[in-house]
Amino acid sequence: MLRFSTTAFYYIGKIILLRKRTKNMGTILEGLRSANLQKSIEKTEDTIRKPEEKKTLRGVYRCRVCGYIFDESLEGKPFSTLEQCPICKQGPGAFQQVR
Image 1 (cartoon, helix red, strand yellow):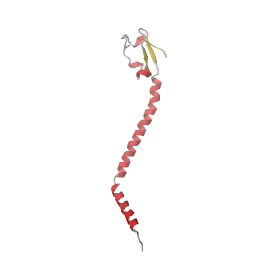
Image 2 (cartoon, rainbow, N blue to C red):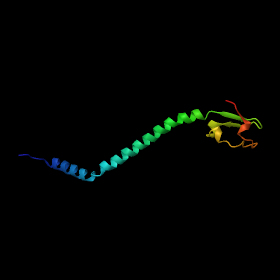
Image 3 (cartoon, rainbow, N blue to C red):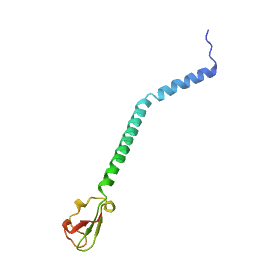
Image 4 (cartoon, rainbow, N blue to C red):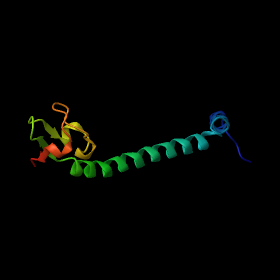
């Protein structure tokens, strides 16, 4: 005959209660895992994109008319987006590449 102590019944009861409470925990944990996975994917994609942006935004251009300096890395946008010089209003043709 199998005999259980009162502490064994206590722990068995605890296990049953925890199983009832955590019935939906599998779906909650699965949702958290997929959210964490999505964040990891986004961080990886950002890391991959950053070197490409730095490579393309290295140019420095100087306006031949007024001397205004357009640095792509400081402006955060490529020279091709510049419509005119902000000081003398000359077009992009008035700029020469410094480096």
